[in-house]
Image (cartoon, rainbow, N blue to C red):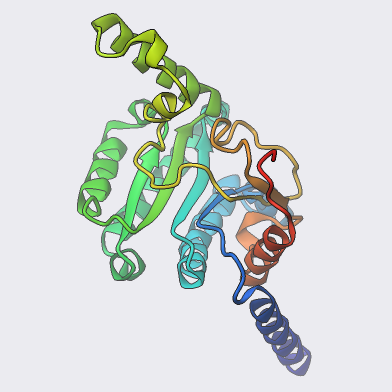
Length: 260
């Protein structure tokens, strides 16, 4: 059994090195966004409570961030909790909120965050979150606000339609106050009012969704217009470095013409 396991690990390492060789020297996505899907199904298949799957998935994010940073990715956006997720059972939502508290607390002392100087932002209708979690978010954002080369964006209480509606409301208020004229509103103006306006590159080059589902589920609806999409048949808690490398290889093999 041990010999078989060691053999499999050896094969994995060889495959990983081969994938690295394949993507080396080619265009690496500047901004990767990931829909973290499959936590609950992974838990069910392992006879665990749903929040056990969420916890394993949350633990995975640190590794994935490090893998992305090592490859030269500048921005990573993770879809962690949607507006629709508030409709899940109360106990599951409460456990998710506790996981967010713990992981944000860990972020304050994270070697990866401070070594790579990663600015952390939470995007979404954060006013809907528990007050103590909102305060934790403010602490993490304040602690990393002076980092401006790499970004980790956590989409919590996020919805793509909600983001567009919120941007439209802000613009309407600007027009009503006379600070913006209707004829001045164009795509660039609109983008300044999105949750992602602080990013040097708002639009993800590559969006990955785990678990085998093939839809965006409201994720970055405005920003994803020309993103490359990659759907992987692996649950998020089981996501491996080779899965990331395979997704990047898929991205590199596509011709990006942006409608031209």
